[in-house]
Image (cartoon, rainbow over all chains, first blue to last red; front, side, top):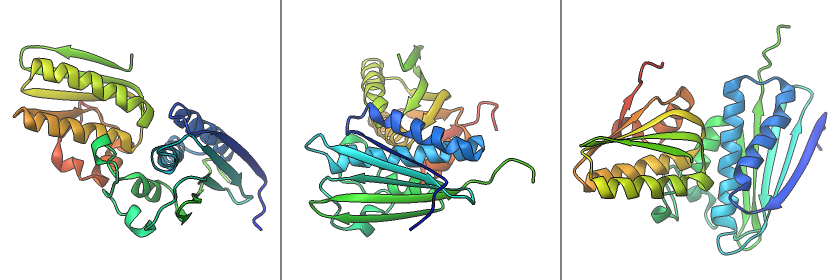
Length: 147
Length: 106
């Protein structure tokens, strides 16, 4: 079990107005690691993509709950876990391919996972069709402080 | 209002203001398309100077307008894109698709 020096949990209904709230909340939590402006922007973008996936895909036909856990470790790593109890993903590998989308006519670019991979150090996706999906991401924050 | 639209005879410039995500993109897209379909400009410029945040929904927004301008035999240009935004655009191959005009910013 990973030891965190601080952690938070959030949960909210899968309404698109909450996309902005979620990324700003996680960015605010991460700010205690003294991240750069670029790092904050990376975190916000990755969280926004994961939460949007819950809203657009997992709970496509319904309103469900999005669960977020965020923790920081003593060596300055931010971990974020975003979980839903939605439809799940049949083929994770295909879902993660850049430009692959099941919502072409809604102008989804199919870049959600590619963006998460690009802006975070590590991302793991676990999913069971019919049960839900968990996206776990982590990023080491290079502290700006002089040591 | 999340966008401001300026139009002259053959050109429409859209200044996007604030955050672009899945929630805000829908309204922006409807408003831009209504103007473009009414005026049928030769050139559409999307200006990102006042964009405070953008995820891949912004890419969808650009790609969709690119297609629309193609249908109208027009051109699209993207202006004042930050380095963060550029990273996401490159991922989508949009650095080839639309002309990225730096507008004096690096």
